Length: 228
Ligand SMILES: [Zn+2]
Image 1: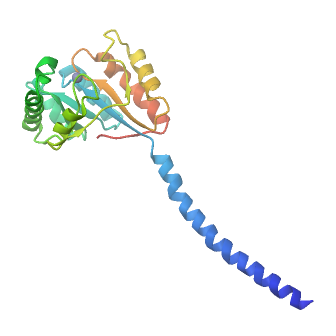
Image 2 (image 1 turned 180 degrees about the vertical axis):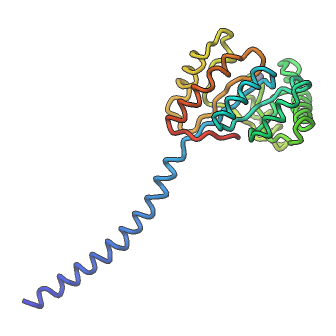
Image 3 (image 1 turned 90 degrees about the vertical axis):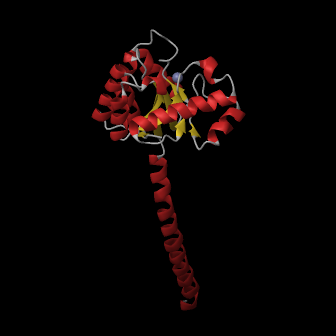
């Protein structure tokens, strides 16, 4: 009788060792994977065409109130007289990138040389105002320019930033805070990494008005807000 139990006891002992070993491994491996899945939803709020006194100021107020970082792609010619707005953005932890010096399509895209001059002039204006050398770039008039133009700008050390969601504030002149909010949510869809295009140039009061609702929505959906 006893001889029968010995192999059984050995078997159960081996089983316990096996479970203890792989059970622990499974648990420890699963925890970081779960934590990663929880934290990977992120949204980047990006504002083009500023700075403007009223709208950028109102947006900075909301971002401060909500403790939310964002990224501003500035137009160099809008900076004179509004240096303190850009300085405030940097001081409050936001990123400032290059959008264009003039934002005049024909001038910017006349040649490679004019494109690079436009980028360099805008970067110099940002650095002069804030003391920070910008490293981010967004193409004016459309996110996806030709590969060659993108490579030219990347060769200058910039990270070119597009977007994968928008709020419609740049297209529809009569965009309301309601339509801006709804378009942002609709175009973000089920994406887990959202780069949202918004505008903070003059006349975009409705964007500033929609911002608290946009932030509240994505926060409720579990997104982390980040500056680029
Ligand atoms: Zn623009």
